[in-house]
Each structure stands twice: as structure tokens, then as C-alpha cells.
Image (cartoon, rainbow over all chains, first blue to last red; front, side):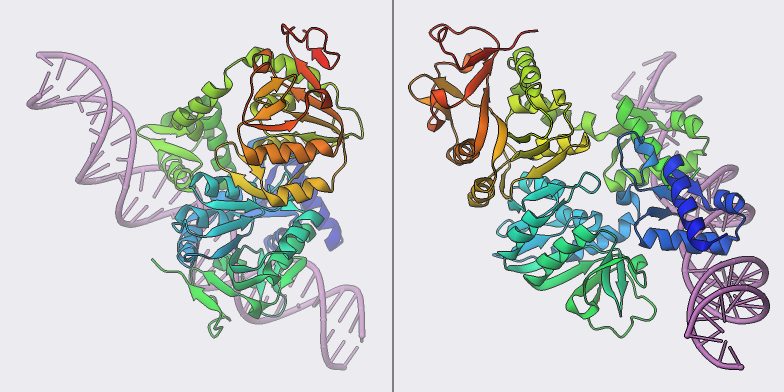
Length: 248
Length: 248
DNA sequence: GTCAAAATCAATCATTTTCATTCACAAAAA
DNA sequence: TTTTTGTGAATGAAAATGATTGATTTTGAC
């Protein structure tokens, strides 16, 4: 069987069932554990499925799908994300003009924000609502609302962002790699990240250590263009000056 | 069963029932007490559910206080609003470019919308989310988010709206009067209404009969600039050609 | 109210499962 | 040939699970 064929069969089965275990896929495709595991990594980086402990879950949030069949990124690596988020929130100072990217890790940042004398801009609907509820001045970028991630994307967003000059900003990412930089599966979301990135002075990537050495299809910035906030040392990145370890 | 799948199932069940006991979840998922207990901790830390002695509660029921406040505000003339909303939703046709203003009456319209082959624009965050969830293509105007009404206002919104040409649009209002036209309490929201109004072909005001003959501080359109959808005849307005009565 | 029984809880441990890494081998490509 | 790519097996590390312990909370009788 062709490798590509196997990949598409995995995607298909995961989407049909909502989930699939690695064991199950091994039998189904007559492949070794190693191969299945590699395939799951590939598909996860490509944004086709979401890899979870024991197998993979569907990313497809179409309406006919039951809620329990959809992987919730919010419930993975919670402790790590909170640690990173707390550190990140502490970087926001009075009079800052802050950009907060859509994403689950950035969502946790909001819980730790205390600086009310700053102005916030975001392309994530729920982030905006939370900030607004807290009494912060918050601006939403205009544009098309993606139902899957509740992020706002599109030409309108890019135009709105092109007029801003942020003093500080926070972005999530799917992949971090010394050569390919920061990458994400969705082309449109990458575009928004890139534009906001360009118009920001202090740039921070918030990502747990699992994102290192993973590469997704679309890049939005080079490795040395941002400071990375993560929770632990990653092998091969010990000498990087632009990595901050968030500690308790 | 995948661990993440189990977490999703717990969240779903807790949200559906409002609560669930640990015992009940053990049987339902064929997992040990330890596992269920761990899962409840994880979900609680993630903010998905609220852990209580003996099991867990849904976020919605525990924050019922706040929701009730909103519900109370909305509860005025709920039947009338539904009637009006149903009629309004029926006016949306294939290929329409629809503007839906922020507000409680317009929110009811969304529940009755069936036309998926139209493009929607709104300045209300929750309207956008609902439409998106239903599978509609929806655009949010950019700008500052007002925490009280969750409406987007400000210069950015006006600029974004100035570029659109809607085929049909729906607005709420606080006051309707033959002489002063349509009025609302908030200056900024009036500005948004005015701008969207100007760039729309078929304009509909959705308002229950109690709004007639009342006047709010800021006007956004003249009386004869829109068609009014309401639920019953109002004294003094019997001869108005631009009033539609929504009936069962 | 007090008290004791019952239920629930957090913490710890051993076991099992799953994971990432490495290596070796073979097939395909240069 | 040499290199590249894909695959499978083996290793130890990491994570998930279920049972056990004693602490804490709730319940109901008094």
C-alpha cells in the first residue's frame, strides 16, 4: 500500500468515527506501530487530525458531528499552558498596545492579565469577550468568522491589522523549527499571524515544548524573529537566546 | 476508549444534565473511580466544568446568576419578539447580503434563519457566533467591543460598514416616533446603525409595539426610511404604509 | 447542637499502555 | 554505486490506569 493512501485512509477513518486508536489503525492497515505513529504525527502537523494519547481525534467541526467526537485542544497540556500564560501576562505593562492572537494557549493568557491600562486587539471572538468582561478596552479586527476556531480571518482583518503598530504581541503556533521557523496548518490564519507580527515591536510566541521540531504547512515568521515562551528545556535548542522558560 | 474522548463525553454529559455524580460517570464510561476523579480535576482546571463534592456541575448552571440577569432583561415581550423575528427571517432570500444589527430582538431572528446561501454581516459578537455555528458565512465588523451590549462600535466599524452595500438589513430600536423617527440611547451605537442603514437597500426595523411613541436621545433614521415589523396595530399609526404586522 | 457511620476525597504506588528515539534493513531514487 | 526514503523492531522514558491508604466531608440518628 502506498504511504499517501494510508494517510488518507487514516484521515477518513478518524473523521468517520470521530476518533481512532493507534492499535485499531494498526490492524486496519496492517502496518507496524511505528508506521502508524509516524503517520499520526504527519497528519497532526498538517492539521488533518489531532493526535492524542492513544490515537487521534477528528478536527472536523461540521454540524452533524457530536461534541464528544471533536478534540478539544483546551484540555491538552493545561498546566504547561497556564504556566506559560502567566509569565506572558506579566510582560504587559501600562500604556501597552497589545495584540493577542487566536488560540488556546493565548486564551489562558487572558486569565492572568491584570493590566487594565493597556489597549488590547485580538482576532479571537472569545478572547475579546473575556477581556471586555474584565473591563479592558478591547478591539476586534473585522472580517470573516471561522466557525472551527472562532478566529477572524480574511482581507478585512489584514487591512485592519496593517494600520496598527503594537508595542507587544502574543501568538500561538503549531510548529517551531530552527530552519522553517513558526508554522501553522491554516493558510488564512497564517496570513493574519504574519500581518500582525510585522506590525509589532515585542513579539512573543507562546507554545508548550511539544511544538518544537514539528513543522506545519504554512510558515508565518522566522525562528529568530520572536521570543519563545515555553515551559522546559528542549533538546537541540539549549543555546537559543530567544527562549524563555516560564517557571513557578 | 481514548482518554480525551472520555473527557469530552464527561463534559457533554455534565452540560446536558447540568450535573453528574462520579458514581454515575463510572458506570457510564466503565472507568475506575480514580480515573473519573482525575478527569474531573483535569476538566475543572481547564474551566470546562465545576467540580463539586460528589461529582461536577456545568458552568452554565453554576453561573446562573449572571445568565438570569440577561434572561430577565430579554424576557420582556419574548413572545412578540419571536413572532416578529420569525417573519423577518423569512424575508432573507438566496444570495442576499444581510446586515443584522446588535440587539435582543435581532438575536431572535437568527433562531429562525434557514437561508444558508446568503452572506451575513453583523456588529454583534454573539449573533456572529450563532450564525457561524449554524454554518452560515458571517463577517464581523471590526472595532471596539462594548462590554455591556457585546456590540462592536467606533470609527473602525463605521469605516468597514461604509464599504458594504447590503441588499437587506434588520435593526432594533428603542424609540419609534412619526416625527423624530428611530431613536436609541447610545450615541456610538446610533452611529453604527446610521452608517449601516445608509448602505442598505431593504431596511427593516424589528420592534414590538411598546416602542412606538417613545423617544430616546439619539436618532439614527427617519420614520419613513424603513419598514417596521411589529406584532399589532398601534393607535395613531393605522394609516402608515411602512408597518407590517407579523402574525402566526 | 453532637456524634458516628458512610461517602467522598487526595495522595501514593505498582502495573500496564503508549510514546519518542534509535538503529538496522530494504526498496526506490540519484 | 551512493544516497535517500520508508519501514519495522527494540529500547527506555513517559503517561495513563486502577487499587489502596488514610484524611476529609457529608449525612442522619440522637
